[in-house]
Image (cartoon, rainbow, N blue to C red; front, side):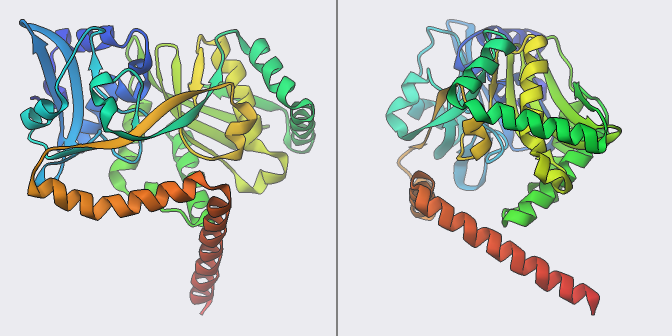
Length: 361
């Protein structure tokens, strides 16, 4: 059991070798990401699994009060699990015992985690932009599902260029001001839609800025920006590991909403990422309209929990299970989701008006 920064060079090489292919190649399971989180959240640990003296797996986790365990940066990440050799086997209960955990809860468990499969309670799709055949093939697939979508989007792009200047796209910006601008746009979106603003949490802002400057042979924080003339209008910050790009924080300037800048950005992201060797972009679990526009296929992620028999585990179950069931019921029913979304937006609108009135007094 070690802190992420205590892993040696041979450990990191071994970890990366396990990530060469398959579901655990996901950027959120890369050692660089775990180490970045570990520098800001001191409760992050990595269990190093050995068999006959050789390392066969790495299990990154956070340990909270009463032995409550989660993946690193819970609620922020779209891939959870144990990174392991192809033939590795383990006992989940024994793993938790060795880690000092009474519970390990996950909501984005990747496929291929066979010892964990019996603890899954829900499996859900995570839409992917498939670029393995190149941008032209991806574009043809999008057009085959909706003949008018690309035509309308490109019409808006031409109008945006006429009104505000030629469109340019940057993939791999290292400008922290670009990143901070995207976080500000995202914060405004959270407030507008009644969601909790993640960027009010200092360590999350610090994490993204740290990842922006992280560069290894396989891993990098990837910032992209769409401009009209000299004006940034949309952007995205995600993580790349090898040929896989994880979507994370897309955002746009709401003042340009009528041009669909977020959709334009995603289309150009696909083009530039494919040219740079990316073969898939995981857009993440969740019901978002723009994901349906660009979805090529789905990954499958699971949620559930592993529980050891203990009083602490019973407390966690009583606290979280009713909330989890209610949330999943809402997410699974489009009518309930739309109703909940309306309520959140109405509450956000009321809050904005009240705050504005108070500030004018």
